[in-house]
Length: 316
Image (cartoon, rainbow, N blue to C red; front, side, top):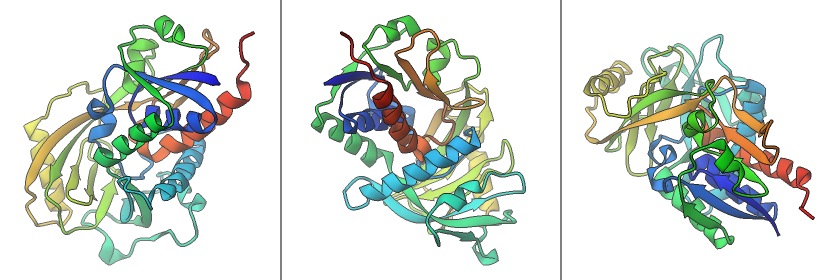
């Protein structure tokens, strides 16, 4: 059986591993930490193309991911469909709406808009709850015969020596691993609160002033921040105040009861690195998905499996 090693246990790594298993590869995941400690475990995880390029590839990946999430709906996977308000301006990428099923997306009505939003799209989109979905994927990976090993990889050379085919899904860690200076963090701070009585929405139209509300099954995620090149992994009380003020300015007067404060560093790049390595031809890079990891993960994974299956040449 063809074998491949995936590096990374976040949403990109897990979906890549399962898609490769479905393409009849024997897969092993190696990661420096379990999925419970990954960035993917503490994000809002709603289907929302944010801070990712290139647009043409992103839209296709996002559409295929949307379709794949629909397959998870009948199972206790943590995936559900919810109404979502997505603010936009003249320069925003809204092309993704053309690729979704007819009737899924429409212009939001004036009375639906949170304060401060002039125009937005209303869509039924997948909501993914990481605390449920990541274990669901990991157990599926193991049930498919997958192997998992905790191990820190310190160099691209070491990574390249891990197998006949290796897929690099290390997110922001690829900056050091691959000496990739195009990769940088966008710091996001969020609040996990008791569930609010408000529609889920996101307003990414003002750089440095991101705000959003994501209602999940038993709690609400309130965000956020989008500070580029900010490596601070700690909670900033001033950002907490800022997030709460933006919530109030949005017209939500209900004071949320905060359950947790979280910080994550989104792996942003000028364009997602989705290619074979120029020096290590058996290594494929799949990282740099910005704030849209869950939005494009399955689309990338499915294309990855097709690329590797078509290019695979067994050793003699």
